[in-house]
Image (cartoon, rainbow, N blue to C red; front, side, top):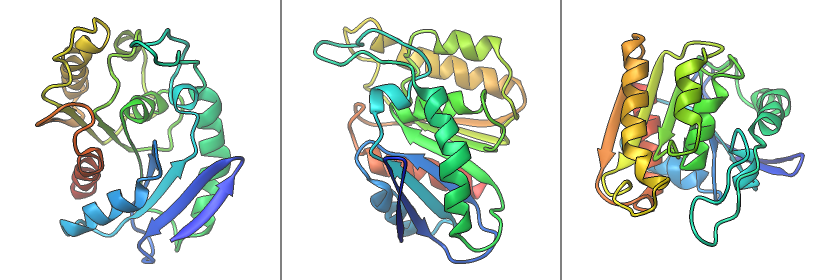
Length: 224
């Protein structure tokens, strides 16, 4: 594993020393990259490199525009995704890829919760990712579904993975309640465009087995 600090973000490069394997960028809430990588390896997935980024300003870096707090005692979201995406594409990706062997076969982007929202948003701003994993993605985020339905990705992804806990929409919170319906509609939208897309329902709520759900999405992306 290689650890770097790039403009305040912690970057861990984990994985294969083989040349020309896929590379997946994973934005993490609490530096769970190593656990996700080991969980993926445990189910004998193809060789890959994982670049896990942490020390993120979660409610700023991962969200595309401002939004009030989604639930009591939460911080408001202040849209910093465009700014962070510039850092990712102009600084983190070039620096990380100087440390690996050869050129990656393809690049994917993945994330859980708000990072799953960011993964999806990123393909509308940059063409560097060809596979997307949005695990328990915060697709309740106000305006996101409408944005997807009215904009074209910069580069049409080859494969898209969505997952959700089957209890995530069972809440009285009117904002969070929409997550399953929105995710299903978004998945159907991409599928109707002819993109290889899946929605995996998992038992439990949003906080149940996050690293394992993340790894499952990454393994699916690698096996396409």
